[in-house]
Every structure is written in structure tokens, then in C-alpha cells.
Image (tube, rainbow, N blue to C red; front, top):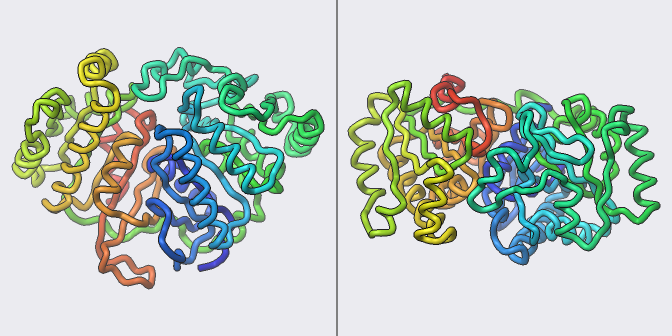
Length: 428
């Protein structure tokens, strides 16, 4: 493979495709790996995104996995490292964003990095260090009800400072609006003052583009996927051809949804209202030992030929809290993930070759169950969500993917209400 311009570490699988999508939009040829490969990548790419499932695991484990990903990326020739987390800065007071950033900075021997989860195209903006979701502050949005990482503070400087011993500062909008030179000068001033991490404001794609030249010399960038839009022209000029081309779509279509975000609840409701065939997975039935996965697959076998089917555990916040109170947060999550992973494998066995999976934790469980090792990134469905292609184990190794699975891993918070209805049209 060619030396990768960017070595990227993503803390969940939907976040990885989100980042890869924005890199492809800039013209990069991107390969996304599922986990850390055992050997060389052996693919021609301008950027490599290593997908981890480390967002909500213990911080020490997240650090260990991230450092292993860093070591592999460096062995492939990666120069700059991009640590990608969610555009809603999903984390707790214990991490994992701060501890992973600390560990990567130590390993790279760098004394400064930024933190910028802004993604204006998906209505994630930062102003004066405060993160907004649409017109709402983060802590007033649906993220306050997240079952694993409820976000109750919108001040990212404060949130990040609780997770690190390094000093956290701010590059505010007044600086960003003045362009790359002003950002560079602000970085120098913060470093001189002993600041090691700086939350960076951004309210538009122009702000992200202003950052690119100022960040080019940083060994480490930590951000959501939006900052990728601002990569420097020199980086973009390295890419060649149509980065988003995928093989022709074939096979049956299905959606598996485990996210309980406000956006995904709306997408499930819209799909059902449009007349789509849907099967609800009940966590309490799983806890009682019922073989819900087999029931779902028996149902899907009868409906797949008529059009896309939806199998979902998506529920409103009150229902989620009731289940968690009864079963415990960890057990409830594991039961649903295991069931949906089994359903996903069964759907593929039934002939599904176009598959949407909604939710970061759900996507991680399903992709691992399918034993997918690599994804090729294709066209964008919605900001932050591309179609990808996973080659079959017997596909030729010359880049000509003959068979396999078209896969969209959707972050729970992304996409319009009609996402499940229109996403398959992109493959036609």
C-alpha cells in the first residue's frame, strides 16, 4: 500500500464510517478496518480508519486498544493521527476521551492537540466552548437521556478538564473567524501558557476549512468527523480517481436498529407509518429466555421478498429507563446487542446484501458477529453516513470486489426522519 497520509482511530464503528465518509468527500481513498489488522493492510489508500468499540468500555481498556491501533498505524507509515469521537462528545467524567487523548499524546511525544466535535452539517456546533445540537445546548437535547453516556453539561472545556490532568483551554470563535494564521497564533499562545488541549469553536464548514492549515503540523488531532472537511489542499491533491465507487448493489434489503436516540425513534416511526414491515425486539422477552432472534428471523423470511424489513429494539427514553431499572443498564444492553447481532447474521444467511444498522453499540456488535475485517467507503446517504462495501472472504485481492455486503452503519443521532425509507435509493 502507499504510505497513508492519515492514520485514524475511531472509538466506535458508526463513528469510523462517519469520519471515512468525510474523508472520501474530500477525495481520499479510504479503507476502514474492523478492529486492528493482524498484518499489513495491503491496499492502496490515502487514509486508514481503524474502528474500535471503545467508547463505553472501561477507560484503561480503551487506552490499551487505542495505543495498539496507534502502533499498527505507525507501522503502516501513518504520519498524522486523528482520534475520532462522537459529535456529541459522548463520555463520562471518567472518560474515555480524555484518557485516550492523554495516552496518544504521551505516545506521540506531543504537547498540544485540539478537541473539536463540531459537525455543522449535522447541526453540531461549538460557540464559546459550548456544544449545541441544533438550536439546543447539548445538555438540553436528547443526549441528556442517553442510556450509557448521558450528557448533562454543554461546556466542553469543563467536560474535558474533568477527564485529564493536562490543562484545557479554548480557541474561540473570534479567533477561528480570522482564519488559519490567527488559529496558529492562538495555539502558540496557549502552549506558552501551559495549555495542552484546546476546545475549538466552529459553527460552519468555513470554520472547519480555516482550521486545516493550522492543524497540519499537529501530530495528533482529536475531533468528530467534521474537522476532516478542513484538510489542507496539499492533502487532498494526493488522492486520485473516484473515491466513492462501490460494486453494484444486489440482494435483499434490511434494517437493524438498536439506537434509542431521538432521531432514530423518528426514523423507525416514519418507516412504520410508510407501510414498512417491522418487528419489535422486546428486551424483557429476551430476559425471560425467549428466542426472540429466531422469531424475528422466521418473520423476516416471510417479508423480505416484498421489500426492506426493519427489526428494531429502538424505544422512547421512558421505556428504556424502565427496562434498565428492571434488568440493569449493562445486562439490558448486552441482551439487545446479542439478539440483534444474531438477527443480523441470520438476515445475511437469508440473502440480505443491502443492510442498514442503526446505533454505535449495535453496529459494533453486528459487524463483529459478521466477522467483517474491512470496509470500502462509498457514497454518502446523509451527512456522516455513507454506504460501505464489505468484500466476501473469497473476493479477489486485487481491489475488484465481486461479491459481498453493502452496509450502512448509522449513528443514532444522524439522518432525517425518512432515512430508512430513502437510504436504499442511493445504491440504485
